[in-house]
Length: 513
Image (tube, helix red, strand yellow):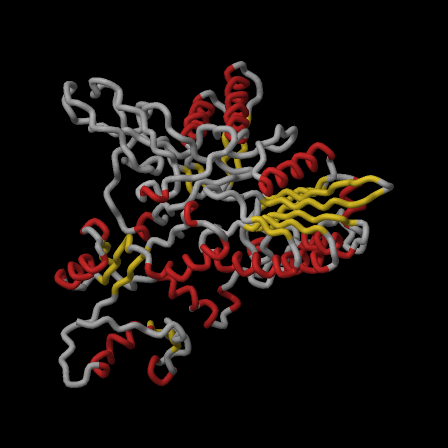
Protein backbone atom coordinates (compact mmCIF):
# COMPACT_ATOMS: atom_id res chain seq x y z
CA UNK A 1 0.00 0.00 0.00
CA UNK A 2 1.35 3.44 -0.93
CA UNK A 3 0.22 7.07 -0.96
CA UNK A 4 0.99 9.10 -4.10
CA UNK A 5 1.17 12.85 -3.56
CA UNK A 6 0.83 15.24 -6.49
CA UNK A 7 3.22 18.24 -6.26
CA UNK A 8 1.41 21.45 -5.36
CA UNK A 9 3.07 23.25 -8.27
CA UNK A 10 1.09 21.16 -10.79
CA UNK A 11 -2.36 22.39 -11.87
CA UNK A 12 -5.24 20.17 -10.80
CA UNK A 13 -7.18 20.70 -14.05
CA UNK A 14 -5.49 20.56 -17.44
CA UNK A 15 -6.70 21.45 -20.93
CA UNK A 16 -6.64 18.56 -23.39
CA UNK A 17 -5.18 19.05 -26.87
CA UNK A 18 -7.74 19.29 -29.66
CA UNK A 19 -6.33 16.29 -31.52
CA UNK A 20 -7.08 14.13 -28.45
CA UNK A 21 -10.35 15.61 -27.23
CA UNK A 22 -11.89 16.53 -30.57
CA UNK A 23 -12.80 19.98 -29.26
CA UNK A 24 -11.23 23.20 -28.02
CA UNK A 25 -12.81 23.26 -24.57
CA UNK A 26 -11.98 19.89 -23.00
CA UNK A 27 -10.32 19.39 -19.62
CA UNK A 28 -9.13 16.55 -17.44
CA UNK A 29 -8.37 16.25 -13.75
CA UNK A 30 -4.77 15.66 -12.79
CA UNK A 31 -6.03 12.82 -10.60
CA UNK A 32 -7.44 11.07 -13.70
CA UNK A 33 -3.99 11.14 -15.32
CA UNK A 34 -2.47 9.71 -12.15
CA UNK A 35 -5.05 6.94 -12.15
CA UNK A 36 -4.13 6.01 -15.71
CA UNK A 37 -0.35 6.03 -15.36
CA UNK A 38 0.27 5.30 -11.68
CA UNK A 39 1.64 1.88 -12.62
CA UNK A 40 4.75 3.58 -14.03
CA UNK A 41 5.71 4.64 -10.50
CA UNK A 42 5.83 1.02 -9.33
CA UNK A 43 7.83 -0.89 -11.91
CA UNK A 44 8.01 -4.59 -11.31
CA UNK A 45 4.83 -4.49 -9.19
CA UNK A 46 1.17 -5.00 -10.06
CA UNK A 47 -1.12 -2.09 -9.13
CA UNK A 48 -4.44 -3.54 -7.97
CA UNK A 49 -6.28 -0.26 -7.51
CA UNK A 50 -6.00 3.50 -7.19
CA UNK A 51 -8.47 5.48 -5.09
CA UNK A 52 -8.68 9.13 -4.08
CA UNK A 53 -9.10 10.27 -0.51
CA UNK A 54 -9.20 13.65 1.18
CA UNK A 55 -8.48 14.37 4.86
CA UNK A 56 -9.80 17.48 6.61
CA UNK A 57 -7.71 18.49 9.62
CA UNK A 58 -8.50 20.58 12.65
CA UNK A 59 -7.02 23.96 11.80
CA UNK A 60 -7.58 25.63 15.18
CA UNK A 61 -4.41 27.16 16.59
CA UNK A 62 -3.29 26.20 20.11
CA UNK A 63 -1.96 29.21 22.02
CA UNK A 64 -1.78 28.67 25.76
CA UNK A 65 -1.87 31.78 27.94
CA UNK A 66 0.39 30.16 30.54
CA UNK A 67 3.17 29.64 28.01
CA UNK A 68 2.56 32.94 26.22
CA UNK A 69 5.36 35.50 26.02
CA UNK A 70 4.91 36.96 22.56
CA UNK A 71 1.62 36.23 20.80
CA UNK A 72 3.01 36.89 17.32
CA UNK A 73 5.90 34.48 17.82
CA UNK A 74 3.60 31.86 19.35
CA UNK A 75 1.21 32.01 16.40
CA UNK A 76 4.06 31.78 13.89
CA UNK A 77 5.16 28.57 15.57
CA UNK A 78 1.60 27.23 15.57
CA UNK A 79 1.11 28.01 11.87
CA UNK A 80 3.94 25.63 11.06
CA UNK A 81 2.09 22.81 12.84
CA UNK A 82 -1.35 23.52 11.31
CA UNK A 83 -0.81 21.03 8.48
CA UNK A 84 -0.35 18.28 11.07
CA UNK A 85 -3.54 18.91 13.05
CA UNK A 86 -5.87 16.12 14.11
CA UNK A 87 -8.04 14.66 11.38
CA UNK A 88 -11.75 15.48 11.67
CA UNK A 89 -13.21 14.10 8.41
CA UNK A 90 -12.21 11.57 5.77
CA UNK A 91 -13.64 11.59 2.24
CA UNK A 92 -12.99 8.70 -0.13
CA UNK A 93 -14.09 7.85 -3.65
CA UNK A 94 -17.26 5.80 -3.92
CA UNK A 95 -15.38 2.76 -5.21
CA UNK A 96 -12.77 2.70 -2.46
CA UNK A 97 -12.65 -0.80 -0.88
CA UNK A 98 -13.68 -1.22 2.73
CA UNK A 99 -10.28 -2.47 3.90
CA UNK A 100 -8.60 0.67 2.53
CA UNK A 101 -11.07 3.06 4.15
CA UNK A 102 -10.77 1.14 7.43
CA UNK A 103 -7.00 1.42 7.23
CA UNK A 104 -7.18 5.19 6.68
CA UNK A 105 -9.69 5.64 9.52
CA UNK A 106 -7.42 3.73 11.89
CA UNK A 107 -4.33 5.61 10.74
CA UNK A 108 -5.89 9.03 11.31
CA UNK A 109 -7.70 8.02 14.49
CA UNK A 110 -11.20 8.59 13.12
CA UNK A 111 -14.49 6.79 13.71
CA UNK A 112 -16.76 5.23 11.10
CA UNK A 113 -19.11 8.22 11.44
CA UNK A 114 -16.30 10.49 10.17
CA UNK A 115 -16.15 8.70 6.81
CA UNK A 116 -17.92 10.12 3.74
CA UNK A 117 -18.09 8.33 0.39
CA UNK A 118 -18.22 10.73 -2.55
CA UNK A 119 -19.66 9.84 -5.94
CA UNK A 120 -17.36 11.94 -8.11
CA UNK A 121 -14.30 14.11 -7.46
CA UNK A 122 -13.53 14.37 -3.76
CA UNK A 123 -12.61 18.05 -4.13
CA UNK A 124 -14.91 20.08 -6.38
CA UNK A 125 -12.97 23.26 -5.54
CA UNK A 126 -10.59 22.22 -8.31
CA UNK A 127 -13.28 23.18 -10.83
CA UNK A 128 -13.03 26.84 -9.84
CA UNK A 129 -10.01 27.15 -12.15
CA UNK A 130 -12.01 26.18 -15.25
CA UNK A 131 -13.84 29.52 -15.86
CA UNK A 132 -10.51 31.33 -16.02
CA UNK A 133 -9.30 28.88 -18.67
CA UNK A 134 -12.23 29.50 -21.02
CA UNK A 135 -12.43 32.60 -23.21
CA UNK A 136 -16.23 32.91 -23.37
CA UNK A 137 -17.27 36.43 -22.33
CA UNK A 138 -20.84 35.62 -23.41
CA UNK A 139 -21.07 33.18 -20.47
CA UNK A 140 -19.87 35.69 -17.89
CA UNK A 141 -21.68 38.38 -15.99
CA UNK A 142 -20.86 41.87 -17.18
CA UNK A 143 -18.16 43.35 -14.91
CA UNK A 144 -19.40 45.94 -12.45
CA UNK A 145 -17.34 49.00 -11.60
CA UNK A 146 -18.13 50.55 -8.20
CA UNK A 147 -19.08 54.20 -8.50
CA UNK A 148 -17.42 56.99 -6.58
CA UNK A 149 -20.14 58.65 -4.46
CA UNK A 150 -21.65 61.54 -6.38
CA UNK A 151 -21.80 63.81 -3.32
CA UNK A 152 -18.07 63.44 -2.62
CA UNK A 153 -15.30 65.38 -4.30
CA UNK A 154 -12.10 63.30 -4.71
CA UNK A 155 -10.02 66.49 -5.06
CA UNK A 156 -11.26 67.88 -1.73
CA UNK A 157 -9.98 66.90 1.70
CA UNK A 158 -12.00 64.11 3.28
CA UNK A 159 -11.84 65.92 6.63
CA UNK A 160 -13.60 69.00 5.26
CA UNK A 161 -16.32 66.86 3.71
CA UNK A 162 -16.84 64.75 6.85
CA UNK A 163 -16.94 67.85 9.04
CA UNK A 164 -19.79 69.20 6.92
CA UNK A 165 -21.96 66.06 7.22
CA UNK A 166 -21.92 62.34 7.97
CA UNK A 167 -21.23 60.14 4.95
CA UNK A 168 -22.68 56.63 4.52
CA UNK A 169 -21.17 54.32 1.90
CA UNK A 170 -22.77 51.14 0.54
CA UNK A 171 -20.23 48.68 -0.82
CA UNK A 172 -19.67 47.21 -3.36
CA UNK A 173 -22.05 49.49 -5.25
CA UNK A 174 -20.07 52.50 -4.08
CA UNK A 175 -16.32 52.57 -4.30
CA UNK A 176 -13.98 51.77 -1.42
CA UNK A 177 -11.69 54.60 -2.60
CA UNK A 178 -13.04 57.17 -0.08
CA UNK A 179 -11.82 54.93 2.76
CA UNK A 180 -8.36 54.74 1.21
CA UNK A 181 -8.38 58.51 0.60
CA UNK A 182 -9.38 59.07 4.24
CA UNK A 183 -6.24 57.29 5.48
CA UNK A 184 -3.98 58.81 2.81
CA UNK A 185 -5.19 62.31 3.70
CA UNK A 186 -4.36 61.57 7.33
CA UNK A 187 -0.84 60.52 6.35
CA UNK A 188 -0.17 63.65 4.28
CA UNK A 189 -1.90 66.20 6.54
CA UNK A 190 0.67 67.87 8.85
CA UNK A 191 -2.11 68.70 11.36
CA UNK A 192 -2.93 65.03 11.99
CA UNK A 193 -1.29 63.88 15.21
CA UNK A 194 -2.64 60.33 15.63
CA UNK A 195 -4.19 57.50 13.61
CA UNK A 196 -5.83 54.46 15.19
CA UNK A 197 -7.17 51.51 13.23
CA UNK A 198 -8.25 47.89 13.59
CA UNK A 199 -7.22 45.19 11.12
CA UNK A 200 -9.09 41.90 11.10
CA UNK A 201 -8.53 40.84 7.49
CA UNK A 202 -6.64 42.77 4.84
CA UNK A 203 -5.05 42.02 1.50
CA UNK A 204 -1.47 40.88 1.00
CA UNK A 205 -0.63 44.17 -0.75
CA UNK A 206 -2.83 46.47 1.31
CA UNK A 207 -2.61 50.18 0.47
CA UNK A 208 -4.10 50.97 3.89
CA UNK A 209 -1.42 49.04 5.78
CA UNK A 210 1.30 50.67 3.69
CA UNK A 211 -0.18 54.08 4.42
CA UNK A 212 -0.10 53.35 8.16
CA UNK A 213 3.57 52.41 7.85
CA UNK A 214 4.27 55.69 6.05
CA UNK A 215 2.46 57.63 8.78
CA UNK A 216 4.55 55.94 11.48
CA UNK A 217 7.77 56.66 9.60
CA UNK A 218 6.65 60.31 9.30
CA UNK A 219 6.51 60.60 13.08
CA UNK A 220 2.76 60.41 13.62
CA UNK A 221 1.34 58.36 16.48
CA UNK A 222 -0.03 55.22 14.83
CA UNK A 223 -1.89 52.56 16.81
CA UNK A 224 -3.00 49.41 15.01
CA UNK A 225 -5.03 46.60 16.59
CA UNK A 226 -4.18 43.51 14.53
CA UNK A 227 -6.28 40.42 15.19
CA UNK A 228 -3.74 37.65 14.79
CA UNK A 229 -6.36 34.92 15.24
CA UNK A 230 -8.45 35.85 12.17
CA UNK A 231 -9.17 32.37 10.84
CA UNK A 232 -6.98 31.41 7.85
CA UNK A 233 -5.55 34.94 7.69
CA UNK A 234 -3.17 34.43 10.62
CA UNK A 235 -0.03 34.28 8.47
CA UNK A 236 -0.92 37.46 6.56
CA UNK A 237 -1.74 39.34 9.76
CA UNK A 238 1.45 38.15 11.46
CA UNK A 239 3.40 39.48 8.49
CA UNK A 240 1.71 42.90 8.58
CA UNK A 241 2.09 43.12 12.36
CA UNK A 242 5.83 42.64 12.04
CA UNK A 243 6.18 45.21 9.25
CA UNK A 244 4.09 47.77 11.12
CA UNK A 245 6.19 47.31 14.26
CA UNK A 246 9.39 47.75 12.26
CA UNK A 247 7.99 51.03 10.87
CA UNK A 248 7.43 52.33 14.40
CA UNK A 249 3.69 51.78 14.82
CA UNK A 250 2.23 50.71 18.15
CA UNK A 251 0.79 47.28 17.36
CA UNK A 252 -1.65 45.59 19.74
CA UNK A 253 -2.75 42.00 19.25
CA UNK A 254 -6.16 42.34 20.85
CA UNK A 255 -7.47 40.52 23.90
CA UNK A 256 -6.39 36.96 24.64
CA UNK A 257 -9.41 34.68 24.59
CA UNK A 258 -11.46 37.04 22.40
CA UNK A 259 -11.42 38.27 18.84
CA UNK A 260 -11.43 41.98 18.10
CA UNK A 261 -13.89 41.87 15.22
CA UNK A 262 -14.66 45.60 15.09
CA UNK A 263 -13.80 47.57 11.96
CA UNK A 264 -13.05 51.14 12.96
CA UNK A 265 -10.55 53.88 12.26
CA UNK A 266 -9.97 57.12 14.16
CA UNK A 267 -7.99 60.18 13.05
CA UNK A 268 -7.14 62.91 15.58
CA UNK A 269 -6.37 66.27 14.00
CA UNK A 270 -5.25 69.60 15.41
CA UNK A 271 -7.71 72.35 14.41
CA UNK A 272 -7.88 75.94 15.74
CA UNK A 273 -5.83 75.20 18.81
CA UNK A 274 -7.81 72.08 19.83
CA UNK A 275 -8.07 68.44 18.83
CA UNK A 276 -10.88 67.19 16.60
CA UNK A 277 -11.57 63.54 15.82
CA UNK A 278 -12.85 61.87 12.65
CA UNK A 279 -14.02 58.25 12.60
CA UNK A 280 -14.89 55.54 10.14
CA UNK A 281 -17.04 52.59 11.25
CA UNK A 282 -17.75 49.69 8.93
CA UNK A 283 -19.37 46.30 8.76
CA UNK A 284 -16.73 44.95 6.35
CA UNK A 285 -13.00 44.40 6.57
CA UNK A 286 -10.44 46.95 5.47
CA UNK A 287 -9.77 44.74 2.45
CA UNK A 288 -9.75 46.26 -1.02
CA UNK A 289 -10.51 42.92 -2.66
CA UNK A 290 -13.53 41.82 -0.63
CA UNK A 291 -14.94 45.35 -0.70
CA UNK A 292 -15.74 44.70 -4.38
CA UNK A 293 -17.62 41.46 -3.58
CA UNK A 294 -19.37 41.70 -0.20
CA UNK A 295 -22.21 44.07 0.61
CA UNK A 296 -21.25 46.24 3.57
CA UNK A 297 -21.83 49.68 5.04
CA UNK A 298 -19.26 52.27 6.04
CA UNK A 299 -19.93 55.45 8.00
CA UNK A 300 -17.72 58.54 8.14
CA UNK A 301 -18.55 60.87 11.00
CA UNK A 302 -17.16 63.72 13.06
CA UNK A 303 -19.95 63.45 15.64
CA UNK A 304 -18.34 64.17 19.00
CA UNK A 305 -20.30 61.51 20.89
CA UNK A 306 -19.44 58.77 18.39
CA UNK A 307 -15.77 59.68 18.06
CA UNK A 308 -15.42 59.75 21.85
CA UNK A 309 -16.95 56.28 22.02
CA UNK A 310 -14.56 55.01 19.35
CA UNK A 311 -11.57 56.50 21.16
CA UNK A 312 -12.78 54.91 24.42
CA UNK A 313 -12.96 51.53 22.69
CA UNK A 314 -9.38 51.87 21.45
CA UNK A 315 -8.28 52.80 24.96
CA UNK A 316 -10.07 49.75 26.34
CA UNK A 317 -8.55 47.32 23.82
CA UNK A 318 -5.01 48.67 23.98
CA UNK A 319 -4.96 49.05 27.75
CA UNK A 320 -7.35 46.29 28.90
CA UNK A 321 -9.17 48.88 30.98
CA UNK A 322 -12.65 48.53 32.43
CA UNK A 323 -15.29 48.76 29.68
CA UNK A 324 -16.37 52.39 29.39
CA UNK A 325 -19.93 53.64 29.37
CA UNK A 326 -20.65 54.43 25.74
CA UNK A 327 -23.27 56.87 24.52
CA UNK A 328 -23.78 56.06 20.85
CA UNK A 329 -21.93 52.81 20.14
CA UNK A 330 -22.96 49.35 21.38
CA UNK A 331 -20.24 46.87 22.18
CA UNK A 332 -20.22 43.11 22.47
CA UNK A 333 -19.98 41.28 24.82
CA UNK A 334 -21.31 43.99 27.12
CA UNK A 335 -24.20 46.00 25.66
CA UNK A 336 -24.91 44.83 22.10
CA UNK A 337 -26.96 41.75 22.94
CA UNK A 338 -29.27 43.66 25.29
CA UNK A 339 -29.77 46.41 22.73
CA UNK A 340 -30.78 43.91 20.04
CA UNK A 341 -33.20 42.13 22.38
CA UNK A 342 -34.73 45.41 23.58
CA UNK A 343 -35.20 46.60 19.99
CA UNK A 344 -36.99 43.38 18.99
CA UNK A 345 -39.21 43.44 22.07
CA UNK A 346 -40.08 47.09 21.39
CA UNK A 347 -41.30 46.27 17.90
CA UNK A 348 -43.20 43.28 19.26
CA UNK A 349 -44.97 45.55 21.76
CA UNK A 350 -45.74 48.06 19.00
CA UNK A 351 -47.36 45.34 16.89
CA UNK A 352 -49.39 44.08 19.84
CA UNK A 353 -50.65 47.63 20.44
CA UNK A 354 -51.65 48.07 16.80
CA UNK A 355 -48.84 50.51 16.01
CA UNK A 356 -46.57 50.17 12.94
CA UNK A 357 -43.81 47.64 13.62
CA UNK A 358 -40.98 46.50 11.38
CA UNK A 359 -37.61 44.73 11.75
CA UNK A 360 -34.95 44.77 9.04
CA UNK A 361 -31.85 42.75 9.93
CA UNK A 362 -28.63 42.53 7.90
CA UNK A 363 -26.26 39.76 8.94
CA UNK A 364 -23.92 36.99 7.85
CA UNK A 365 -25.50 34.38 10.07
CA UNK A 366 -27.96 34.03 12.93
CA UNK A 367 -27.34 31.37 15.58
CA UNK A 368 -27.98 33.22 18.86
CA UNK A 369 -30.90 31.32 20.49
CA UNK A 370 -32.39 34.22 22.44
CA UNK A 371 -32.46 36.46 19.37
CA UNK A 372 -34.02 33.67 17.29
CA UNK A 373 -36.74 33.11 19.89
CA UNK A 374 -37.39 36.87 20.10
CA UNK A 375 -37.75 37.06 16.30
CA UNK A 376 -40.22 34.17 16.41
CA UNK A 377 -42.28 36.04 18.99
CA UNK A 378 -42.13 39.20 16.90
CA UNK A 379 -43.25 37.32 13.80
CA UNK A 380 -46.13 35.76 15.73
CA UNK A 381 -47.14 39.27 16.79
CA UNK A 382 -47.31 40.27 13.08
CA UNK A 383 -44.11 42.32 13.08
CA UNK A 384 -42.80 42.63 9.52
CA UNK A 385 -39.48 40.74 9.50
CA UNK A 386 -36.96 41.12 6.71
CA UNK A 387 -33.70 39.29 7.41
CA UNK A 388 -31.37 40.58 4.70
CA UNK A 389 -28.32 38.57 3.59
CA UNK A 390 -28.89 35.92 6.24
CA UNK A 391 -26.89 33.03 4.83
CA UNK A 392 -27.26 30.84 7.91
CA UNK A 393 -30.39 31.18 10.06
CA UNK A 394 -30.66 28.34 12.55
CA UNK A 395 -34.01 27.63 14.22
CA UNK A 396 -34.23 27.38 17.96
CA UNK A 397 -32.44 24.22 19.19
CA UNK A 398 -35.37 21.88 19.78
CA UNK A 399 -34.85 19.17 17.20
CA UNK A 400 -33.31 15.74 17.33
CA UNK A 401 -29.96 15.27 15.66
CA UNK A 402 -30.34 14.97 11.86
CA UNK A 403 -28.95 12.09 9.84
CA UNK A 404 -25.31 12.70 8.91
CA UNK A 405 -24.89 13.79 5.37
CA UNK A 406 -21.96 14.93 3.34
CA UNK A 407 -21.42 18.71 3.78
CA UNK A 408 -21.72 19.10 0.04
CA UNK A 409 -25.26 17.74 0.20
CA UNK A 410 -26.11 20.02 3.08
CA UNK A 411 -24.89 23.07 1.18
CA UNK A 412 -22.97 24.12 4.29
CA UNK A 413 -19.74 23.38 6.07
CA UNK A 414 -19.41 22.02 9.59
CA UNK A 415 -19.17 24.66 12.32
CA UNK A 416 -15.63 25.88 12.71
CA UNK A 417 -13.99 25.75 16.10
CA UNK A 418 -13.46 29.39 16.83
CA UNK A 419 -12.70 31.42 19.89
CA UNK A 420 -15.20 33.63 21.66
CA UNK A 421 -15.25 37.02 20.02
CA UNK A 422 -14.99 40.60 21.06
CA UNK A 423 -17.21 42.14 18.42
CA UNK A 424 -18.63 45.44 17.35
CA UNK A 425 -21.94 45.21 15.48
CA UNK A 426 -22.00 41.39 15.83
CA UNK A 427 -23.17 38.68 18.22
CA UNK A 428 -22.42 38.38 21.90
CA UNK A 429 -19.42 36.58 23.35
CA UNK A 430 -19.31 33.70 25.85
CA UNK A 431 -20.11 33.56 29.51
CA UNK A 432 -19.37 31.28 32.42
CA UNK A 433 -22.31 28.99 33.12
CA UNK A 434 -23.60 29.29 36.69
CA UNK A 435 -27.01 27.64 36.38
CA UNK A 436 -28.50 24.46 34.91
CA UNK A 437 -29.36 24.43 31.22
CA UNK A 438 -32.92 25.52 30.41
CA UNK A 439 -35.54 23.16 29.07
CA UNK A 440 -35.16 22.70 25.32
CA UNK A 441 -31.34 22.76 25.39
CA UNK A 442 -30.94 19.09 26.15
CA UNK A 443 -32.29 19.12 29.74
CA UNK A 444 -35.90 17.98 30.16
CA UNK A 445 -37.56 18.94 33.40
CA UNK A 446 -40.19 16.18 33.07
CA UNK A 447 -37.69 13.32 33.08
CA UNK A 448 -35.15 14.44 35.68
CA UNK A 449 -35.71 13.66 39.34
CA UNK A 450 -33.72 16.71 40.31
CA UNK A 451 -31.99 19.46 38.33
CA UNK A 452 -28.46 18.66 37.19
CA UNK A 453 -25.60 20.41 38.98
CA UNK A 454 -24.41 23.65 37.43
CA UNK A 455 -21.61 23.64 34.92
CA UNK A 456 -18.48 25.20 36.40
CA UNK A 457 -16.26 24.97 33.37
CA UNK A 458 -15.13 28.38 31.99
CA UNK A 459 -16.17 28.73 28.37
CA UNK A 460 -13.29 28.81 25.94
CA UNK A 461 -12.64 27.75 22.40
CA UNK A 462 -11.18 24.34 23.29
CA UNK A 463 -12.80 23.22 26.52
CA UNK A 464 -12.12 19.59 25.68
CA UNK A 465 -8.43 20.31 26.32
CA UNK A 466 -8.00 20.98 30.08
CA UNK A 467 -4.95 23.18 29.58
CA UNK A 468 -6.81 25.29 27.03
CA UNK A 469 -9.92 25.90 29.10
CA UNK A 470 -8.60 29.03 30.81
CA UNK A 471 -9.06 32.54 29.46
CA UNK A 472 -8.40 35.92 30.98
CA UNK A 473 -11.66 37.21 32.53
CA UNK A 474 -12.96 40.66 31.76
CA UNK A 475 -13.35 43.18 34.60
CA UNK A 476 -17.13 42.75 34.38
CA UNK A 477 -18.94 39.55 33.39
CA UNK A 478 -20.23 39.51 29.81
CA UNK A 479 -23.89 39.33 28.96
CA UNK A 480 -25.43 35.95 28.09
CA UNK A 481 -24.33 35.02 24.61
CA UNK A 482 -24.45 32.23 22.10
CA UNK A 483 -22.23 29.80 24.03
CA UNK A 484 -23.95 27.61 26.61
CA UNK A 485 -22.76 24.66 28.65
CA UNK A 486 -25.49 22.05 28.56
CA UNK A 487 -26.45 19.48 31.17
CA UNK A 488 -27.84 16.70 28.99
CA UNK A 489 -30.41 14.10 29.99
CA UNK A 490 -31.91 11.39 27.85
CA UNK A 491 -35.45 12.20 26.79
CA UNK A 492 -36.43 8.52 26.71
CA UNK A 493 -35.22 7.81 30.28
CA UNK A 494 -37.87 6.74 32.83
CA UNK A 495 -39.13 9.43 35.20
CA UNK A 496 -37.24 7.90 38.10
CA UNK A 497 -33.92 7.74 36.29
CA UNK A 498 -31.09 9.64 37.92
CA UNK A 499 -29.77 12.40 35.64
CA UNK A 500 -26.17 12.07 34.45
CA UNK A 501 -23.56 14.53 35.75
CA UNK A 502 -23.25 17.95 34.15
CA UNK A 503 -21.65 18.10 30.75
CA UNK A 504 -18.09 19.40 30.89
CA UNK A 505 -17.54 20.23 27.29
CA UNK A 506 -18.38 23.27 25.19
CA UNK A 507 -21.35 22.54 22.96
CA UNK A 508 -22.33 24.40 19.80
CA UNK A 509 -25.93 25.71 19.85
CA UNK A 510 -28.46 23.59 17.97
CA UNK A 511 -26.23 20.51 18.30
CA UNK A 512 -26.96 17.82 20.92
CA UNK A 513 -24.28 17.49 23.55
